[in-house]
Amino acid sequence: MDFDYTVTTEKSFEDAVAKIEQETKKAGFRVLYVHDVTETLKEKGFIIKPFKIIEICNAKNAYNALQADIKIGLCLPCKINIYQKDGKTYISGMRPIVLSQFFPKADLGNLPAEVDKIIRGIIDRSK
Image (cartoon, rainbow, N blue to C red; front, side, top):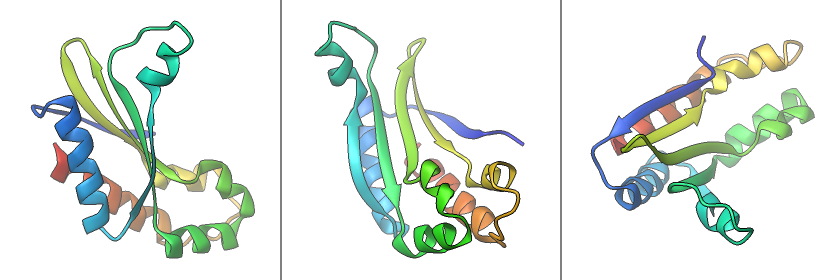
């Protein structure tokens, strides 16, 4: 099982970021924060190609996951990365289905698979 779900897009970097934000809201999730990693590193003198981390969350799903095991908070909120590499723009998200591997004693039921499907859908509709 892959840890991530990653696709390439023909969209510009900024258009891909905007589309992820739009599709996140349509999916019933909320964009909590957009971290411009490129700018953060630039402030310290490090130069990298465009890279943003979009933190997204659905309160009900987060609540249910935290009820199963409070340490799942270490993996929250869900993150979708948008970055450029080798002349291409990528959209990548961690797959929630891996949570069961990290937290085998947590009774998560179908929640990881359901959220995994939503996140893959957000990414697919954004490419």
